[in-house]
Length: 260
Figure 1 (tube, rainbow, N blue to C red):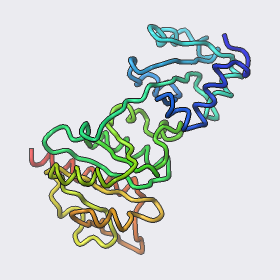
Figure 2: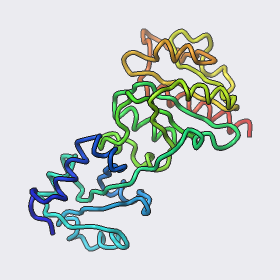
Figure 3: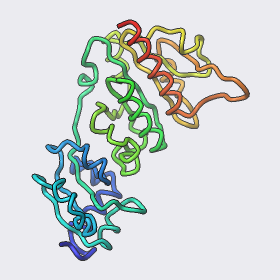
């Protein structure tokens, strides 16, 4: 059992939790809690640490069969954890690297392009909603919040394992690829000519979702085939990014079910 915060493995885990550069260099991310552990693909688990209290529960022993794990003193585990009330299990998971082409599987892909979203909760909620709505994949710009940050990972509630995604340095090649694939692109925009529910999303479709405070950039808005808006009552100008994305995703899912 690891009993000291001076242990190199403990220091390493703390570094992985705090520094995106370290996570990227090793091609891994951290997941914490029973749900995230249970749903993690076993072939991608690199190492797991459990607290002594976690290990003391008889039913937990079976969860650790067939994987690499190590016990940690409770007080030390608390230093490794990113949460205020640790559940006692923390794992290193290998990233799944994807190419843009991986997101275009199937005849009529449904995609999201997230431009510079900054809130971990928003991005996590979008991932969860995307899984529920049957989205084919998510593309994120380099200025989006780090999808592998522990807070963002937790917010996905496991969807990070199952929703294909890609972080890109530049959007231009991706936009070109969308056009080559015949995918119709829609920008959620206040100046939308048409309301979102009057468009046809049964074909290959991509929705552009902009930054929480500034919306979409003029450049990306200009790349869209259509500008669409979500009608508002009262004095509201816009909705939360994850709420707007959810409305669009589920409208596309509804149309596709109806046509099938």
